[in-house]
Image (cartoon, rainbow, N blue to C red; front, side, top):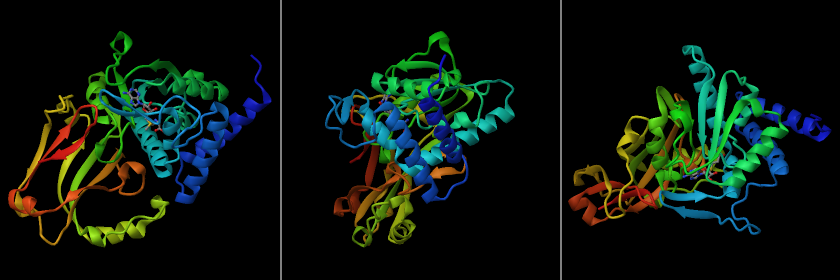
Length: 350
Ligand SMILES: C[S@@+](CC[C@H](N)C(=O)[O-])C[C@H]1O[C@@H](n2cnc3c(N)ncnc32)[C@H](O)[C@@H]1O
């Protein structure tokens, strides 16, 4: 097989920046490294990370039975959520290293559900692990994303790592031969576990995880806060660099409780419901709400693995979400919280 000069050049650039992304970096270095990889990926696949493509018939977001799924352009844009992409890479690297050290079974079987066009959370790790250590099955609901990933893999000569390119809905997928996975990776979420099908996907795929297997992210937590909303500031446009605003806002809030913690144990309780039937989360007594506060917020934390965690405003996934004003009815009767597991998943209350 002849390898073109251009493909060799692409591979060199890929290896250089991928290796870098798996090491300790400052935030400006993360931004530069992800930008370099995005430039390379978008050139090879002709799919650029943009919010609203104008020349494609694949719409920005599609409604599906278990929530909104983003199109390949938006999925590519997720890679530009810099700290998210970096921390997922670091977290997966740490998990794979821990598993390789503790277990005798190699290679680790990994299912990546929702690859987008770049399979961006796993490709950089091919510069750290060998194909004897990790074997990856790639799955997405969009064929154009799988075709794009396939193009990247052949350009970088990484075929040995990948044992399947499956076009399927991850909330229904049944692996052949009832194979169980050591690791299942999926980032199909929005802040406060709204809109996208992360919970439904983990709920379904849980049955294909080995008993000692792990989900990435390991846990997603959504906490309820009361806030002096008028005192809060909005973070700067490049919010992942803005620690001042986070510190400022924390002084005007109080945590009430954790509402959801989705991990490989808890997710089994989160089964799809009809739109008029919701899963009960928590009842908050009125004495917990204080008159000095004016609003209820949901804050999301994504624990990718162990201490590798995305906190508020480090990524699109962990932006604060304004839930509702605090009014007299809440001060008198309290609130009950539920999770709605239909085609528009989200936390609701009455
Ligand atoms: C937020 S993007 C993440 C892309 C990439 N993994 C990353 O982290 O940069 C989510 C991806 O999941 C895919 N997806 C959404 N719902 C899905 C489903 N039910 N089954 C399979 N893939 C799905 C979308 O097509 C999209 O490519």
